[in-house]
Amino acid sequence: MSSETNQELHVDPLERNWIVIAIGVLVAFAILITIAGFMLGIQVPTNEARVDPATFENELPWSEPGLRELVPGEEYEAYVIARQFVFDAGPEGIVVPEGARVTFYVTSADVQHGFSLEGTNVNMMVIPGQVSKLSATFEEAGEFNVICHEYCGVGHAFMAGKVVVEG
Ligand code: CUA
Image (tube, rainbow, N blue to C red; front, side, top):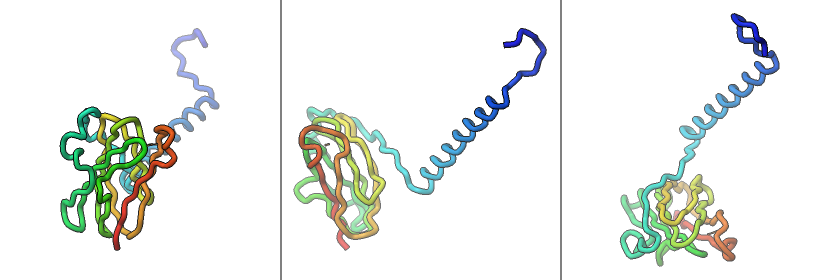
């Protein structure tokens, strides 16, 4: 450190290079996250609502988990309860026609789970007391697996569900 005053701020050339690189990295990340958010459809799971894990299953919609048809053939909602070690989507499960857009509302009845839906960018944590929400449009027929990707107990590896898209 210089004790002289009235000097221009001296920045070592190497230090300046690293400052430029650091700022460049931040700008690059900002550009990439913007592209991901607006062009690739990356979604952030929203904290849609809060529920009381002790009582939520006594009231609609959670007392009747499963699919709801909003616009026939087009727009659906699915209420899914994650619990050790299943995804409960009601007795009929989630069966939709090709081209359907499904908004998933998922919460947990016990511990933290994951909800990762094959072939889509629906991937969220499921936390007791919170409702996580994400949407996906199914352009192709088939069976799409849902897997739990948060360790939730001895049956974690076998915890799976599915969405059936009929052509
Ligand atoms: Cu549920 Cu891992």
